[in-house]
Length: 184
Image (tube, rainbow, N blue to C red; front, side, top):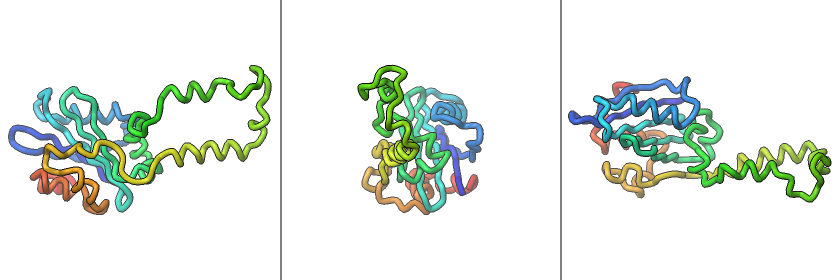
């Protein structure tokens, strides 16, 4: 089961709203959603997007005005098996070079263009390649571990959070526990 909420910091404190991620296909969509939730639309507002898959992983996306979003995911490997987690696991976050796919498409194995590669005849090899991609996502936390440090949640505290109630614990430190619970 998934839970997603937006927490927007306003002059009056934190405001929470639950959010549906059905129409969110990429991090840019999620960032746009967060910016729209910014109360008053002030350019320097901070909006946190909380996403969790019960007992598996949680993620926090922080959007400060027009700055690039900052992301933290508690367990990248678990999130990679989730459609919502895949939104957060960008190539940049995973340390992948987006141009690498272009290099993989080049014929660097010594065969002539159009000449079949003997390795392509082995369908099991294709399965192994897919497995390599899944294994490329490291287990454990990934992303900006200082994402909440200026809001009172240190790197050490963030890494120590239990997946079961991490978002509630973060909200408690932020002083937003009550507003988060109203949308939970």
